[in-house]
Length: 173
Image 1: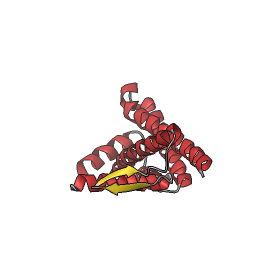
Image 2: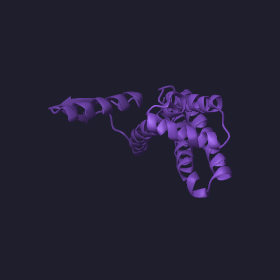
Image 3: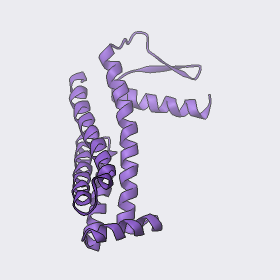
């Protein structure tokens, strides 16, 4: 079995265990137990869970990078540019640090298995994005608010996905 297939199998097994779906391994490939048949809604939930995990990791990494730039100016060039831009908006070093801290808390909460914390994380990241849109519209142009608008859409999407997953999982169990 290749390393890729092992990693994929572990990922599928993890998602399947969350959704209470049983798989068996046959010559390195995962196959669903024959006696356990899944209806279309179970497959839909499974695929949405995979999509949610991928989107969560991408959004969390994006906000984690932004938080590090705001809080610790890491990486140096990006952090310095970001600080200069935010200072031109009239934000103090303390406010910039606090925005970074909220982004960090939101990104960390987003990746928790506990869906309640994930919903809070998505809400925090959406709130930060909404504030960023406001500041960019006030001090710059609408095109400069595009990136915060994209992150707002992603945060709202994650919020809806996570809220919906909580509702669907409660029906299954």
